[in-house]
Image 1: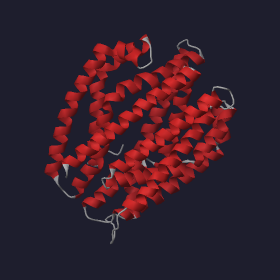
Image 2: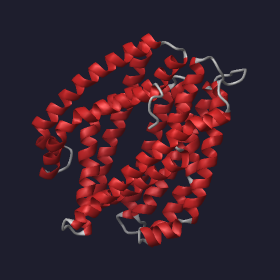
Image 3: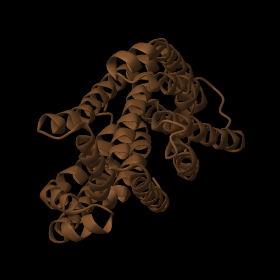
Image 4: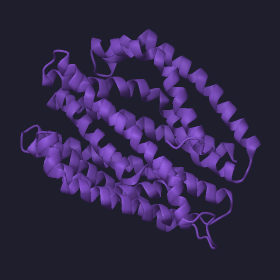
Length: 377
């Protein structure tokens, strides 16, 4: 395994993710100032719904394809066939789920959300699910063949296009009352996904390798191996989505108005959480890279390399996470004000700072265990 390659990919992905998180924070601040913090809370709930629908529709096919293709490369098989398995599998799932959400759009919008203006945006997002699934398959493929630059660049293109669209719509349509924030976000998601997919397809024509022979796993074996990952991904997504939905409801029951509850939820989601996770960008990048690398080493039966890498990663992550926790504890109030929050944001950052080491260690350990096929989430 080329450790220099891992280091270079980690640095590149970190730089990209830092830029994206910085732009995301600026976008949240822009929306907050234009539409109010309650609008950011509403936007967070919409993105949560789309993320949940994505997981349900493709079963975290990015992780599945990345891991199985990496194992196929490690045992000198045919990764292109495994990629086709991933496309067929995710296409069936996304078409079924997307059709179901499209048909149930009226029920979700009018009955569950009690907002008729959400019906059309929900159906637009449902139509985009097969495209999102194919995009995830391509990202997993490039991640597995060590073309991290391509998958990371597609994330950047997707986000920049999506952010530009929602900023434009916020400035000229949403703030003027000519379009709802639900519709604006739905449009931005679809256009952003299309831009990222276009880039990946162009790259696939150029970089996709040619392999002969049969794969080390059949489609049936791929499907059975993917089921535990899908079930655990869905369970995690359900719990996460339920948590996001219950926070504003709990704040409202505590005595806040609906607007105040969404406002506090917006500050938490748009300011506090991104701030706490900002230093972990390098760890998220490393965790993402470790999955295919360790899967490849596992497929080649290189136990010593696996042991050395995991020990070094764990030790350095612990030191980094303790340093980040100390910074948040000492300067949380100043950081909260600096990133556009207030005394409330700073107070919560300081309260949550002791949990930072556990959060950061979990990020890396999850990547290690996924690469070793010891967990399926």
